[in-house]
Amino acid sequence: MEYILSLDQGTTSSRAILFDRSGSVAASAQKEFTQIFPQPGWVEHDATEIWRSQYAVALEALKKLSLNAARIAAIGITNQRETTVLWDRKTGEPLANAIVWQDRRTAARCDVLRAKGKAALIQRKTGLVLDAYFSGTKLEWLLDNVPGARARADAGELAFGTIDSWLIWKLTGGRLHVTDASNASRTLLFNIRTLKWDDELLALFNIPASVLPQVVPSSQMLGETDPALFGVPIRIAGVAGDQQAATFGQACFSPGMAKNTYGTGCFMLMNTGRAAVPSRHKLLSTVAWVGSGRDKPGGDGAMSAANGCYALEGSVFMAGATIQWLRDGLQMIQSADEVEQLASSVADTQDVYLVPAFAGLGTPHWDSYARAALVGMTRGTARAHIARAALESIALQSADVFGAMASDSGIALRELRVDGGASRNNLLMQMQADLLGVPVVRPKVTETTALGAAYLAGLATGFWSGADEVAAQWAVDRRFEPQLKASGRSEKLSRWRQAVDRSRGWAEK
Image 1: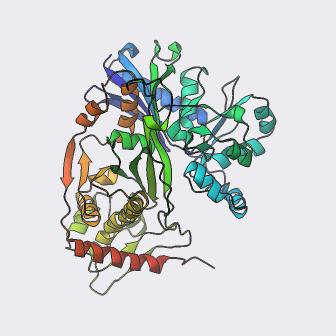
Image 2: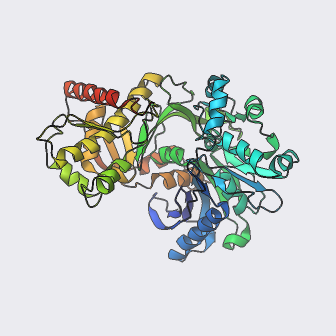
Image 3: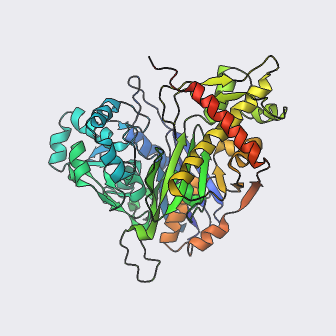
């Protein structure tokens, strides 16, 4: 068996990537699917369309290499994390569209729970802030608003899952109803310290335990696909939420190692080891991954924190989206790729700062009333200075998050591993190194999310021998060393925080 098939199910598209033993991409396929917006603040997906698109790209990737499925050692799955599906156990059909992680319809329910003083309880058990972002209130909404759903759930007729659970159910012909600990930790229903569904939280959200999937390790032989799908059964052996999978794909295996994915926004995760670190800065404490322990002396396959690790997670709302604003809103550039050259045409911003709080500020501020601000302009300010300030804002926001992580964890960042589309911008990566004061390292293989799922599956099936072999495959494309003196970095961060203060609370009535 020569390949691992990674199924990377994202928010806008489904992808399938075949990795060989060197961790290189052998073939891939991608298919977009429909985004559904029934009303303002609501975002839905057709779960059946997701399944069909994911199955189609898996077949297409195999076809590109003229592969017989018998040459596939295992399947690894990674997914958009908090999106919620409810389906009929007998027919395998969804009762309604999936409610996407971006959906805000349960914000009022979160407000009610917050007013009742439940936020601290939820954060203590789950490591999460109380927000409509997560799955618990989405599932509660489906049970309360789909006709007959609650009665059928109470009768044991329905199954809930995040997208990983849904795909595994379909891949196995309904034989497996499971999720891994990393996805379970994004539901508001899972105790990240006991690694079990929490009865008190289930009661709080009025969720019957009968709808929940079994929680399994992220790296373990789970079962096999229905032979009818690929001609032969293929082992399913790796599962992790997308950001956790990316962290694994970046080989961030030791406490203090961290990655930043630069996409529309930024997602930052720092490995905190076997400790679930409580945050004082509104970061999320989450399960990074859990192994089975079978690869360790005396390992019995039991799921425990000793066989995995935790992470602190922070997010920035506007990263690549800031560059899109320069292109589409200001029409300052024709394509996103132009921003690096334009920003490089000036030596600095001339003390101009862009705070891209177009939709408020995320970690560590969490100010929904903040609005974007461009400060410090003079008659000498040109579009190149604004372009450079836009790039700098991405690095500055990320620096704020990593500062909060270091404060919460007591672990100093040693280097930052990067991926995502904007990580190809060399100027931005140099800015990031300068503002963090640590090296920023971009790997040769940037498909880190899919690669992480592949590694989890490959380690569970012996395709790769262990974490040391995986870490050895991680290869550097370019390393960016900090060039800014500590005094310059401190001054830059201080001015940035002044600019942020000017954006805070702007939309408050």
